[in-house]
Length: 77
Image (cartoon, rainbow, N blue to C red; front, side, top):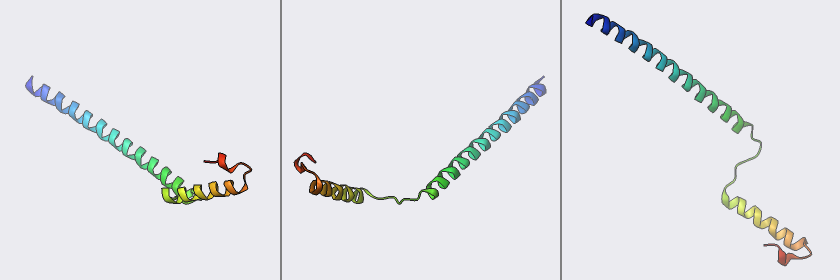
């Protein structure tokens, strides 16, 4: 009787570890595939990434241009 319980326990443990291993493998593959897709998207971006300082400089340049060409520059700000 004790031997039977140990055997059942061992079978359940083996089944559990096999399923858990398969789940981890599937999850690893899913994350790997998601990362590959993300890397492809990043590589396909034609523009360039800019920092906040560059963005602020571009914004100020556009605001300056609009103030020079607008009929009511006091309304721009």
